[in-house]
Length: 320
Image (cartoon, rainbow, N blue to C red; front, side):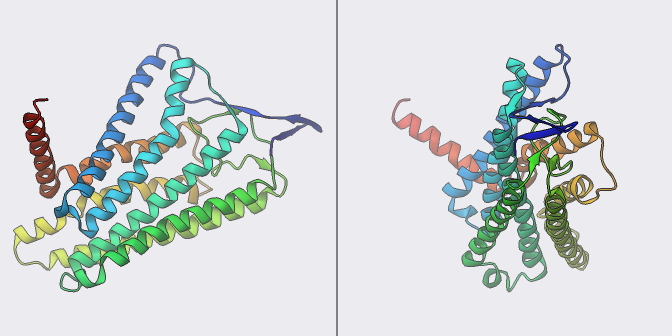
């Protein structure tokens, strides 16, 4: 998969150039600082959520089980794209081997697909919690939660394997300069050979997965909103809506960006818009997830206070 045909001559391409966000030298330090802060905050925030959920038994509920798994995915997600971008901003070295680019692409596919499945699983969890509260403990038990998370990863890995098998049968004939800040071949399909198979595979599977998840999320939240509106007390309505409003915002933003970028080929977004959408759902969503989902919740705040108090008591006891 490392050849490019131009004018009948076979020119091997073993290295690509990730254009990133332009060549302006005055912007490189600012962009490096911005993305470094985003990366550190995103990793620290999501890692904090994972640690709190694991350590505090009060957070051992289905909702926080899904949140912790989503935070784990987000840590890997931003770590797949941002470190390479930060290195190129520091060194100015934008070259990446085609093999490494394909490896980054497949990790990105696995993690983004797993994230999409987990967001849908969280929609189902909120639907059962609000629309069927009496049956919720039986319907959303530990076994069901584990199965849902396992299937999210199974679907993601199978999708990535399918793409890998298709790509291995093709040759790379795209431009040496790749106008993006990470390797994402899906929207442009820069492969030759029987490339229609890859296009059909990625488009059809993306459409099926994305549309199914979107419709399931939409149906869940339609039922949730109807159930919330039937609650008599305004306090009850506010409490019920507060548990799912943040998730609704993230699901809406994520699915709209994914549909525009991958599912609507007629849209054909220009590189700048495509990079903007990628930053929105690939960087800012993982950054905001800890705040939107957990850090503003009373249970998580209480768990954080308890953890800080235990740490302070430990340090006092040992004279640290």
